Structures are given as structure tokens and as C-alpha cells.
Image (cartoon, rainbow over all chains, first blue to last red; front, side):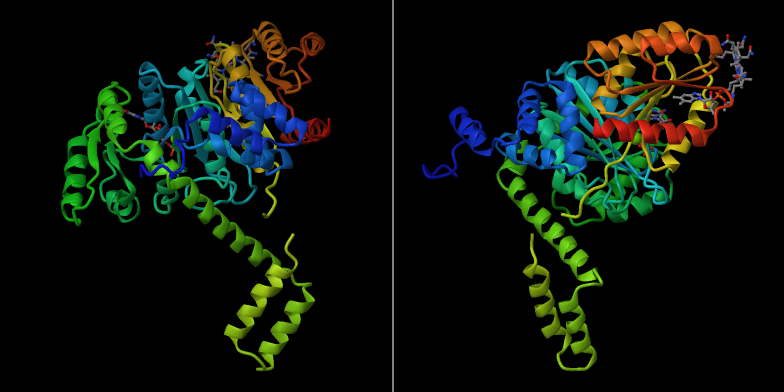
Length: 339
Length: 138
Ligand code: B12
Ligand SMILES: Nc1nc2c(ncn2[C@@H]2O[C@H](COP(=O)(O)OP(=O)(O)OP(=O)(O)O)[C@@H](O)[C@H]2O)c(=O)[nH]1
Ligand SMILES: [Mg+2]
């Protein structure tokens, strides 16, 4: 790692300035927004997030411009079944992190209605006491049909908060239970929240999301049954191959117990830069490109008015070429009219 | 990239000590069913926190529901805070139990529209859609 030709430390100030200058957007609106968000102006941070969510030109320019600034914050993912106590835990953690001198960004994702596309975003009600803190910024996102417990924009929204100088960023997922693996890519430290009284439902959780936990948080530890839940979790873990066992911690947000210990454990887990900056951001870009290229190709090939593709389908129907050959040609057709 | 859709974002909250939440919950559901993203901030919000949340969430519309009186003082304060934060472009709406004679005063403060008890949900949805469209092109 320490070879002289290695990439300079990302925090080296002159390098950052150079990189910034190279990425600065030409669009004056994006430029102003960017300047203000770097100064921590809340309205500008909020507007930048909206632009990114809606994938406007300004949003794209901002994402490009902040690339040199990202990867500094520690990102803490919070997942767990609906009602597990994620938002309440987040609120308690915000308090503790503020106390420790951090600036805290929060991104809370709630599901969108599959029928109307609308959403009721209710997580931040539980974090209300931090609303007026100057060192806290909370943003609610709707999943907008994206599967995987997050929203399509969430990676970029985290990056904006990172660029705006929030050094601890909490991300609360939808809590759908199973397909929460995306949080493993986004977060440096992953908390899986397990309340007591889920009983056999713990079975359901363990299939999908126990694996992704760095820390298993037994929430609502003031309620009866928390001991039982902890025992169940320990038992389940003991049955697994032992490599990188998650810690188990009991926390009661209601009684404010266990929060300091949880923050200590988060601090002790690997730093963001090692997990995210070094390989994380590049790997993330790779995955993003793979996924979005796939979406784009699919959309293009599903457009029924593509004459070339229709001819190709006819050729398959007539038995002139086989599926493997058609696949290669379809890829060429999709790439041919690339924007 | 497959273009993302712009969605109307609305913050709905209850300032002051008024605990009547049936009306606001109905409106929240109606807006969601019309495809909007609604942040519901619950009861007992201070004007300061409503304005701060409206800014952080970058909403098109801030709607407040008040049935237990105090709407004049509360709305005046919210409108003033929005101006102080240079956020008067956020459309401020009020609803609930509001005497008709207070409506001109509320509008003078900067409340764009008032929906009293008995207001139709469809009318509310249509108004917000119109106001958000106007705002997007402004
Ligand atoms: C039901 C009710 C209650 C229930 C509330 C249950 C609940 N969780 O909501 C209970 C019994 C708890 C209650 C208690 C009290 N109530 Co009461 N209550 C009512 C009543 C009869 C109906 C309210 C209601 O739910 N309407 C149905 C909903 C759907 O209508 P809505 O809220 O008006 O909402 C519609 C529109 O206004 C609009 N809207 C509402 N908000 C918003 C926001 C936006 C942004 C938009 C666009 C639209 C919008 O959309 C909705 C759909 O049309 C009203 C009478 C009335 N005419 O309003 C009295 C009334 C509001 N209550 C009153 C009083 C005095 C009280 C108490 C103080 C009584 C007491 N002495 O204890 C307590 C106070 C509680 C508190 N902390 O605030 C008075 C208020 C008088 C005033 N403003 O000067 C009223 C007007 C009765 C009266 N005529 O005296 N109440
Ligand atoms: N007794 C007790 N109740 C708690 C505690 N933490 C949360 N709760 C309650 O659990 C319920 C759900 O809490 P939330 O924090 O909203 O849970 P969530 O996981 O964010 O919920 P969704 O976002 O809807 O999936 C609320 O009624 C909380 O008051 C706790 O430490 N003790
Ligand atoms: Mg929540």
C-alpha cells in the first residue's frame, strides 16, 4: 500500500482542489448549488438531493462534481423487519453521535405504493427531537419501485451528505425483511435490528439478513423477551460457520440503555476509508454500470418498433439462426444506437 | 439511464397543541393515492421545526392542519419563517376548522389556500397538482 506511486491520500488538500476543479460543472445553476452545499447550506443540500433523485441534468452534474469529495464519512446501515425499532434506534444513535462531536446525516427509506407510486414517509417523526440541530440533516426517500430495501438514488444521496461534510451517515432501509443485501454495499457498518417477541419470525429474518450484520441489535430491550431473543440469536450464530461472527448487543431506545456501547462498537468496526474509499467506490461504480446498462439494454430491446430486432426475431422463428447467435446480434443492435 | 419520474413532495403537519388528526390523516392518504410523496410529521410540531423539515425534505407544499384555534398566529409565524429562510416558494396551505372570516387574513400572511371542514379530497389533490406544476415551471 505504501509504494510511492500509489494513489495519494484522498485527503491531500491540493489534490482534492485539483480534482474538484477538473470535475466542476459548466452549468451555472449546478455550480452555485455545489458551492453552497459544500459550505453546508441546507436548502442547497436538499435541492441537490431532489435533482439527483429526479435524475435531472443538474443532478448529474452534481454527482460528477462531488466524486473527489466522497468516501470520507462512515456510513451506518440500519435494517430489520417493519416496526423493529429502526427509526427509534437511529434517533438514539444520532444523539450519541452528536455528543461525540460528529455531524450526522440520515437517509430514511420508506416503501412506495405499488398502485399509485405515492408514499407516506414516516421515519423522521421518530427523530423529531433532532430536527433543529444544526449538525443533523435528515432526508426521507421513497423506494420508488426499486427492490432491495433502498431507493435507486440512495447511494448518490449518501454521497451528497458526505460531500456536504456529514461524517456519520445513518441509512434506514425499508425493512422488507429479505432482500436487504444492497445495504452491504452501501454501508461500512451494518446493524440488523431484531426486536423481542418475533418468535418464529426470527426464522424468516435469519434466512436473509442475519448474514449481512456486523452488529445484531436486540432492540426494545426494556420489553420482556429480550433475553430470549438474544439467546435465540446466539444459538443461530453458533450453528453457522464461524467466520466474522457479528456482535450481539442489547439496546433500549426507550430507556436509553446500550446506546453508548453500540456507538463504541460502531467506532471499533473498520473505518470507512478502508472499506469504502479504497475499493468500495470503484466497485460500486462497476455494479451501477452493470445494472443500469442491463436496464437500458432491456428497455431498448423491449421497444416493439425496433425493425432490426424484429428481423432478428423473424430469423430465429424461421430457424435461420439459434438463440446464442441471436443474443450476440441483439447486443450489437442495442449498442448500435447508443446515446 | 431510464429517466426517473419527478414526484410531488408534500409535508403535512399539525402545529400547536391541536390533537385532531382525523382530517390530516385522510388528506395524507389521498395525496399518497394520487402518487405524491408525503412526509407526515405528526402532531404538536413547532412552526420552526415544520419549516426546517420542509427545507430538508425540499417539499413543493407545506400543509398544516389546525382545528383547535390559534391558526392565525401559527400560520403567520410559519409564513414569516419561510420568508426568513428564503423559502417562500414552498406553497403554504392550511386546513381544518377555520372560520371563513379568517381566510383573507391567512392569505395576507402568505397562506396560498385554505381548505375548511367539508373540503373535498379531490379538490385538495387537484389544487396541489396545479400548484406544484406551476412551481416546477416557475
Ligand atoms: C372528532 C372531533 C374531536 C375528536 C378528535 C379525534 C381525532 N383523533 O381527530 C376528539 C373527541 C378527541 C376531540 C377533542 C377535542 N375537541 Co374536537 N372536534 C371533533 C369534530 C366533531 C370533528 C373533527 C373531525 O375529525 N372532522 C372530520 C375531518 C375529516 O375533517 P377535518 O379535520 O376538518 O378535515 C377536513 C378539512 O378540514 C381538510 N383539512 C384538514 N386539515 C387539512 C390540512 C391541509 C393542508 C389541507 C389542504 C386540508 C385539510 O381536509 C379534511 C377533509 O375534508 C370537530 C367539529 C368540526 N366541525 O370540525 C370538533 C372540534 C374541532 N373540537 C373542538 C374542541 C373544542 C375539542 C376539545 C378542546 C374539547 C374539549 N373541551 O376537550 C378537544 C381538544 C383535543 C385536542 N387536544 O385538540 C372544537 C374546536 C373549536 C375551535 N376551534 O374554536 C370543534 C370545532 C367542535 C366545536 N364546534 O366546538 N374532538
Ligand atoms: N418499548 C420500546 N418500544 C420501542 C423501542 N424502540 C421502538 N419502540 C417502539 O416500536 C415501534 C416501532 O418503532 P420504529 O422506530 O418506528 O420502528 P421501525 O423499524 O423504524 O419501523 P418501520 O420504519 O415502520 O419499519 C414504535 O411504536 C416505537 O415506539 C424501545 O426501545 N422500547
Ligand atoms: Mg422506521
